[in-house]
Amino acid sequence: MVFKNALILIFMILGLSACARSSRVDPIAQEEELQPVDQKPAWPVIARLKAGANPIWFEFTDSRSSGYGNPGQISSPAEASLAEFTPWPFARSSAGMLAFGNNIVLGINRFGFLVFGPDTDKSTAVMYSVPDSTWDDYSIASVFMFEQNPAVLLYRDDFFDIPKEEPPQYPVMILDEKYPAPAGIITGFLKFIFDNDLEANLLRKGVDNTWYVRCRKTNEYPSEAEFFRTVDLIALPEKISQAAFRNSSEPLTVLRDFKLIETMAVATQEFSGSHVPVLRIISPDFAGARDFASRTVAGNDFSLFFGYNRINTEDNPETAQLAFAVLPDGKGIACSQNGITKFSLPVLPGDFVYTGAGLAGDVLIATWEEQDEFSVGAAGFMVMDSGVLGL
Image (tube, rainbow, N blue to C red):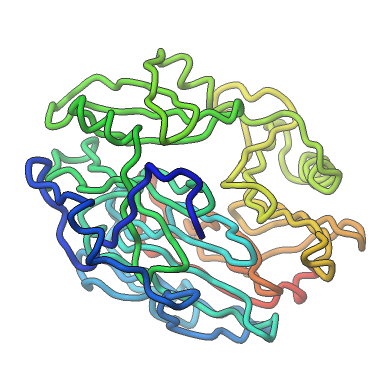
């Protein structure tokens, strides 16, 4: 895919360690050496998963004890490794899920990207691994769409411990079909952060379609947060108040898609009780994840659903319109041309929850993790035939 703005410089980070700010590599000097691979997609295939009635389970290996590696297959989450509970910024787990065309993309903390795409047989998913060894020292703050590509923001967490590593050389890394590894980018926004000795530790798109950024001063502990917004990640940001930053996270309260409206209505009636249901939707029909709510959310008085939405288009008329929402315990509601269907994902052990779900063809991918307050133990994902669930 081609970026719309020529000011963005893309270059590969192939096994290089993150450098100090004083020793940044000049991207222009490197540009001639780092040509894209002539293959689409260029990501390494690590498995073809034939989904059936029974789920196929995988766990993420612990980067700090087991080393750098791809996810391993297990018989069930109950048989997952007894991973030591780790504060969530340091744990190897899914930091977010995106729909990227017909693919599902996971941003895996302390690892890289995992991609699931439909094979010729729609009940089979091709699993691609797109790791980067430099990520092992950094946490994923945000998983989002930059232009037309999945991207992550890397940062050094200073809440649970004072960082020992240098700041990431390239805080924003993208997934591109032309490259076999994540690629770093430089934009006007990132240059502004660097020039002002700041580090971004949260990035999100507000309901006004504007990017909102939270930053801290580099190597000052503690340091007060500073907040900015920008129309895109190429333009320079403007400073805003903490209140303006907080207000930017309010979910949308207007749904124009009928299937989403119906899904929200049924989910509200069936599962949310007195709480406001907030539906976090990924879809190939819009960029990134979006939060929707039936009414204004006050504080933490909400129930979070993870959802997926697709519509049939002229390019893919065989794809039926579908919207579904899943609670962390796996209970779900689906809405399609066949009506409303209740379903349930495979039951997880106690203290385990689902953290996202989406479709690659007819294959459902759902992420899960073991939680203990602010810490994560075992974590991974499962795949299964969505038709078994009535989707």
